[in-house]
Length: 85
Image (cartoon, rainbow, N blue to C red; front, side):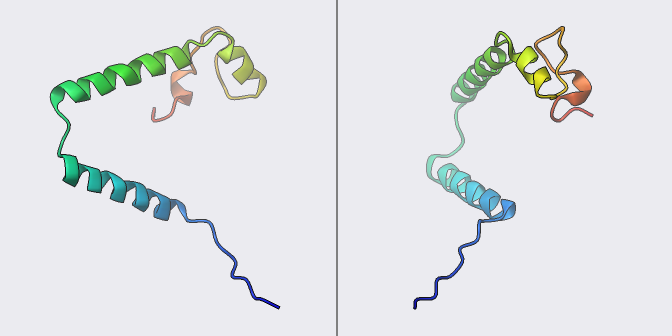
């Protein structure tokens, strides 16, 4: 009979450490992105963010699940948004 070792899931700290290691290696390999590349990335991020926030029916579906979204708007109340204090 073979004994199998239980494989445990990596902790959040281990996963975060791996992500940082990959980012660090990329930075050392490629250097910092240019201003044009950073502005392009921010522009693309903004367009994705805006399109996701304004998806039709998102507020209604989210409120059905009890997420705290305002039913009158497509955006969560400021106090419920991530990162807002």
